[in-house]
Image 1 (cartoon, rainbow, N blue to C red):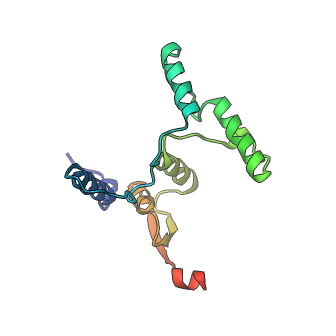
Image 2 (image 1 turned 90 degrees about the horizontal axis):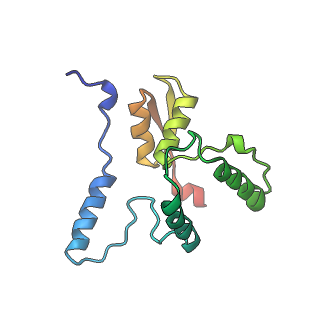
Length: 149
């Protein structure tokens, strides 16, 4: 079977780092996880209670593609409360994670073979997603020392 050139992306080494960190933890080492952007605390108690109650009475089937309407409206309200921004809930899209959001945004914004500028250093997953979508990531080098001064 011939493989698509889009599958020829560099490995996302953060998963290797996470695996090594978990192995070190299993051996008793204390690890401060900074390799992925995931929460280090439990979800708020109210959120966990709502989920627990829903599991008893809600069949938890598929949802609408852009996210639950009430959630999208709630997010729009938060933007008003926090930032004073009147955000139309129809412009809010809820994804299962940031990578899914990147896929949606990049496919909506760029045609195949487009060149896309990325800050470097930056989030490695952007580069992998762009390559998988037949887009060409272009580094825009940054200098943190100059940015601070």
